[in-house]
Length: 267
Image (cartoon, rainbow, N blue to C red; front, top):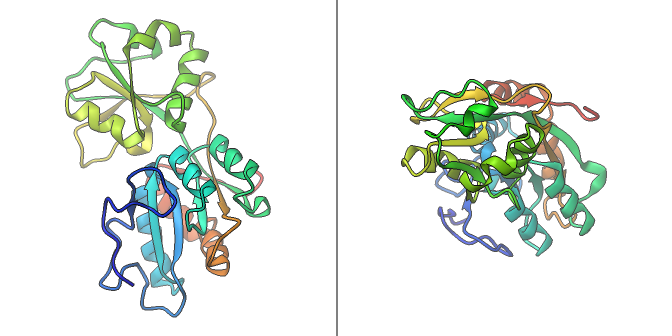
């Protein structure tokens, strides 16, 4: 199999995506030396590092090859509904999984709540202090990067939080919509905005951004990442094995280390 390249267009997709970035070996995918065909996973971009790590463990345990397609969940849903060749879908919210299910594009019997996450207000060192949500109203915070609230799960969650806190209308003119969770961090680190609202798990030691306010309490949205096998999966057996591994104890340790909350079916 030829190695996929970052920026390649995904079959059936509607935007640039990255396939198996950081995972490709000489033959194109982690574990590609196994007899099984690769399992192709479309996953929310906020899961990039954690899934890369899990895939390495999965391959080392003899689980087989995995190819990743990371993007915003709304983009992934459209790709799958349009017929993209995907075996497993992991969304950053239930709404995009629901849309995919209503189109008949996933096997609803395989759907599980895989992970939880939480939002955070993020700033740069030396930036405005944010002790609570109302601190976002201070004049020093003129622009706030948020995933597109009309489409992207992290933006939908952020809008829900601000609405519950009674701040959405007051802050609406300051909101800068971006394509996904990682783009919000990027805008902050480039100095294009004064703060961002994104997933707490997106703040890493490698970047300049820091968590100014973890979002918890009564106004915090419940964030769930569901996973399901795609109805038209070409490697269903491989997808079933991988999904079972992702929901298991070995993967749970990795996800927790990356800041996610592992869930169990029915959570």
